[in-house]
Image 1: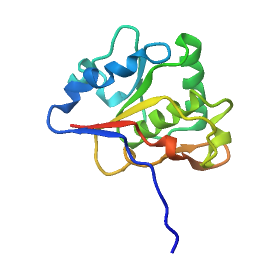
Image 2: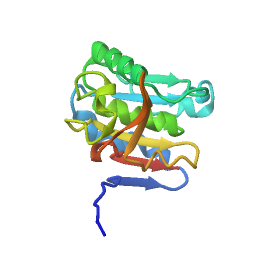
Image 3: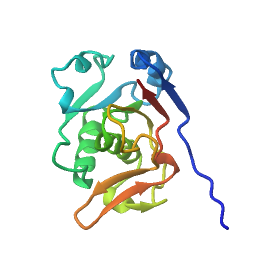
Image 4: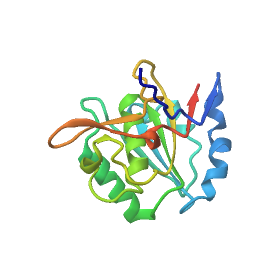
Amino acid sequence: MQHKNFKNIDKVTYGRGSFSQLDETIAPIRKENNKYFVFIVDDYFTGKPLSTKLQNKPEDLVFFVNVDSYEPTTDQIDSLRDEILAKKGIPSGVIGIGGGSIMDIAKALSLMLTNEGSSTLYQGLNLIKKPGIYHLGVPTISGTGAEVSMTAVLTGPEKKLGLKCDWTVFNQVILD
């Protein structure tokens, strides 16, 4: 029998109202890189109460992403990465708020902000060369398990396959 080790989430905050501690949770990380966060939020929450409770700062970038009819793509991740780097450089971290596709976008984006080239080059097991930046997941639905998975599933031009390595796993998850 072969035994394997696997990386787990570093920290989990849970319980009713725990999302209200997001700002406090990420405060120490804000000192990293260019001192701002990227929020990737399911656009389902546009105009809903959650959209006013993100606790983002003026320097942060907030993207409301529609994931109703597709899974994340390599082109989407590469374009988002390029846009973020062109606007503000490397962020302190990425926060994903939504379902499984949003979790996968946040994980993949974290990795691609520190790894050069297209995300298609990294679809597979342990192909990522450098750790990503801090990333935190706030799942808003249950069932996908994306918040605990070491895979960020992406559909590319040639294949649907995950970016999968120890660095894919979230640094922190908030379960409210």
